[in-house]
Length: 160
Image (cartoon, rainbow, N blue to C red):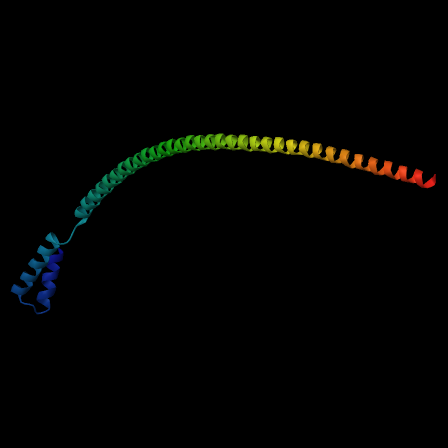
């Protein structure tokens, strides 16, 4: 027995008028066939959903591949930019170091020249002092000889 027939008989047995029971069974049958899904409907939806999921999966894989390739390209570009920047900085530093080295050599040469000038000046001064001391020593020795001679002469006179 069909479900609709059983439902109709149960309503009539429950004192529902035949007209109302028929209307209810027809409404129920209409809802069951048009509103509710059957196994075929569910299978179709499942297959459509699987197809959509597969399509989304493929789209995502393609998008991931594109993003991966874009990132690799950007990373390579950044790497190349950094290498170029490092090379530039290295060259600038080498130039700066060479300039500082040249400036230091000039300063060292100036200091060496100044030291040589001071050394020559000190040697000249020492020679002058040596000459002055020699002259003074000669004067002192001459004076001492004169004093010694006078003392000797006085002693000889005294003891005579």
